[in-house]
Image (cartoon, rainbow, N blue to C red; front, side, top):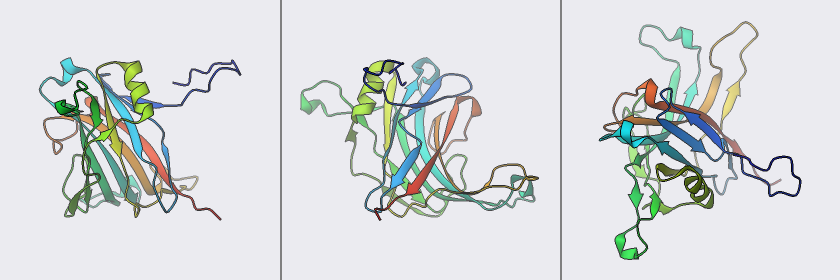
Length: 223
């Protein structure tokens, strides 16, 4: 969505990452894929989801962030054993959306939905995270960021926001490059943003209405 063109005098646009589901009914717009941990704060994960209400009908749209550690090749996952450990999950319901209270006397104003975090294992969709504690990432629904407002204005009334704030102890992204004769996903820690349609957040993912986007977190500290 960088519309600056070749005109050097035109205001520089903002790059936005876009990923649609295989059936084209759900599209996720992510403001960036690299997030910096400055030790004092972590960049938020923000964006919007463009929804086809006719397809969703009475169901819901969820977005979640999953951090995982892979320590073995996928082709070695046999006999029920897996060489992948899910470390952290944050989840939010994007649709139906959250609006500001009518007491604000400002009409229906979109807000970012409240997110919850899971550490350990509770079996979210497509994940092995279990046995952990749920903790609210922020106490209530947050107002839209400036970039979210611009995206929703551009995409229309069927675009809805999401906002995640990673904890200070979230692991940094690490990738161990495979050897020349190895195949499959590399070992290391990665982050994935998933958007999907379901009745509840625990429902099994359907690939036709599922959009994954890989992201990365980096540590940065002033020398």
